[in-house]
View (spheres, rainbow, N blue to C red):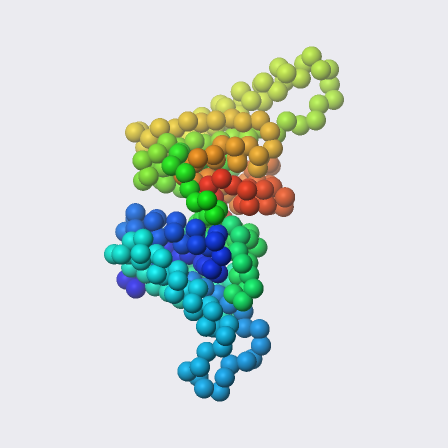
Length: 282
């Protein structure tokens, strides 16, 4: 494997993992980077034969998953440099280690679990915090060809997410769509004043969003930027904005509602029902 950054993808042989490998191979080819495919399995018991050359059934199946993934990646891009890595242990720990120095870490949104011990759904959620590189979680249906959508809230964390999303949009030749979500709070005042009060909040959000995207417009003068303020639940709004998107980018930490985008039930809603790959910046 050549020196320099690479794209790391985890696989357990599930259909979602296959989509992740396909997406990661395409991204590695697009960027001219090597691809490292990783399969992690948990050793159920000390059942290794005395002959070190003989593999357990667990190992044989894991090796088969890895070989199939490598074959699929190279069939898609014959000139792609691919390394296959088999590890025994905890999937989150192993992929966290593999993430150090990587350009991206890629997983599927759901997994098979079982022999590989790599239930990609729970592994992906844990990696949103632990990964040392941006994490991309790919749904089974893959990606659209539309803009790169990014959830922003004015925080330093969302500035990083915005910068990453802008670079992605620029390199892909698609538009950037920064989204600010306004959650409608309960109102206990006169009904006739609610509309104007909420409209004021939306206008303030639009002004804040324009200030946040200003440096991006300067850095990428040819990039189309379609800023959007949406009202509603953050996960629902981002899923709606992400329809046909090339990627949806969020930060794992943020301010107020944006902080909750990847925590608890909202995290589950974004990661498991997103219509496109979700990139999470820790």
